[in-house]
Length: 282
Image (cartoon, rainbow, N blue to C red):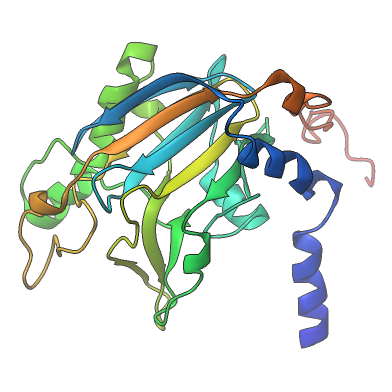
C-alpha cells in the first residue's frame, strides 16, 4: 500500500461529524471562569483514592497542589456504571496522549463522549526529546497482582486498590475498576516499542479540566509512585514516598447561559442484533 493511501486512511480515521468538536463552545466554558459556582473542593491524600459526582454540564478541575504527582482516573456514567471510560477507543479516536478539546469516550454499546477536555495547562509540553508526552491512555493502573508477581510482596496502595476502595461507597467493586487516564503522567514508546515513564513535568497549580457530557462518577488515585522520579524496580529502586503528593479536585457549576444549545450526547444509532438473525448476503 502506498504512503499516500496510508495517509489518507489515517486522516479518515480522525474525521467525521461525530468527531468534530465545537471549539468556540468549549473555549467559552474554559474562559468564563468568573461566572462559575464552586460546588465541591477537596484534596486526595498521597497513596489513596476518592470518588465523586460531576453532574452533566459541570466542570471538574484536577490540579497539582504541592508539586508534581501522577493521578490515575476512572470515569463512569453516574446513572448507569456499566457505561464507563474506554481508554483503547479514546486512544484510537483521539490520541494516545490527550489534551485540550480531546474527548474521553465510553465503552460499547454506549460509545459516546463522557467528558471533553477544556483546559490543559501542560498542553505546551508537546513531545520531548525522548518522545514523552503527557496525560496518557497507553499504560494502565499499577496493581497489587503485578507487584506480587514481580516482587513476591503484597502492597495494598497501588492505584487499582485505591480505586477499589474509592468506589465502594457508590456500590461498585473491583470488577468496575477499569483502564485509566494517567493524568499528569509523561510516557511514550521507545525504539523497541516498549512503554516508558518519565518524571512528571507538572508544577504547583497545573491542572486538567474536564467538561461532563453526562452525569459522571469520577474516581482518582494518587499514584504510590508519586512523580515517578524514583525507580520502583531494578537498580536504585526504593520506596518513593518522599516524592508523593496530594492532588486537588474542584467541581464547578457552569453559568446556564453558556450551556444554551448543549445537550448530553445520545446513544449510537446502531439497531443491534449483531447479525444473529440473518445474513443478507447468503
